[in-house]
Each structure stands twice: as structure tokens, then as C-alpha cells.
Image (cartoon, rainbow, N blue to C red; front, side, top):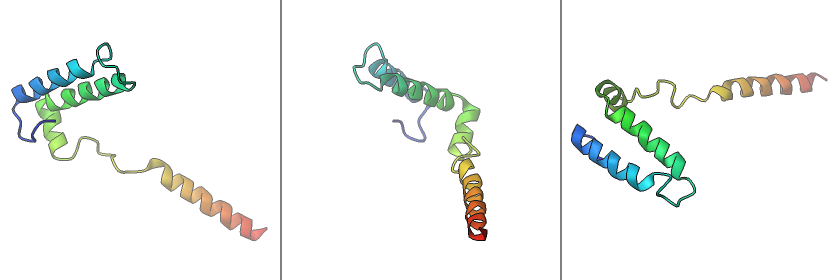
Length: 87
């Protein structure tokens, strides 16, 4: 990883080091491809000034932490349990 206040050159250097070490053609780890994709996605965010600013502010994903399925599943559970009580 890099420091939160890392310069662009430091980020690029760290990216190249990790990309070479985790490349699927080089690494023998079974999850090398997934890790390589994560490294590239992180570099895409950290190397872009606007994306990095949003990431640093915590706005990388405005929907992060929201469980889309919980409200639907809990409402369907409550309606099914209330229906079962009426039978």
C-alpha cells in the first residue's frame, strides 16, 4: 500500500511493483487474476485526481454500506408471517 498523502509518482511505483508481482502469468497463487484486477482498479482510482478526491472524501461509492436486499426480504418475511397468523 501507499500512504494516504502519497505523490502520483509513489502510487505509480507501487502499482508497477504490485502488478509485476501479482500478474497471473507470473504469480502461482490461485487468486492471482482477481488480485491483479483489484490492483488495476485501485490504480485507476488513485491515479485520477478527481476519482482520488472522491475516494478520499468517502464518496467512492455513494451506495456503499446499503444492503439492497434487506428491505425487500424483511418486508416479504413480515408479510408472510402476518399471513400465516391469519390462517
